[in-house]
Amino acid sequence: MRTLSVACALVFGISLLFAGDDEIPYIHKPILDVTATTSGGKTFSVLQFCKEKPTLVTLVYSSCTGICYPFLYVLRDRVADLDPVKNNFQVLVLSFDSSDTKENMASMASAAKVEGNTRWEFATLPKTEIEKFISSVGFTIRYDSASRQYDHLPIVIGVTSEGTI
Image (cartoon, one colour):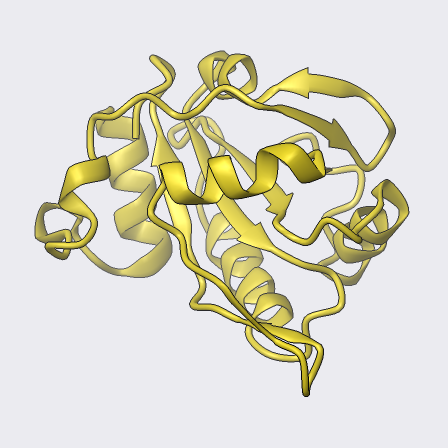
């Protein structure tokens, strides 16, 4: 847990000790085990992936014209600043848009200039799992049919190698 806490604090310049009241119910809760598909086409268990090593999970969608890409660039830069030996964690980028494909996520990885980086994985969730997963971590989205965009805040979730938030 210490490695992940330090990584989150260094990445975002904040302390995890000051989680907001809305976030407190999710701390120490196991991450929901859902199946995801990587941009390379491999299907995997999110819980098992997170148990391999501490993981920063972020939720995005590829057609976002708002926060998703700038947020990924900041996350990429902060992660790149950290010594991978001292800060041994991985980053899982999950799409919450059911229309995203593995190709969309591969393009996102390319745009973020992290394709091929073994510390990063981009993946989609099955349509039936998206709502369950995002609500299990307290993430909220609202679809705006006029703009055809999701209204959402950026999120990063620290998951320990025990699979807990």
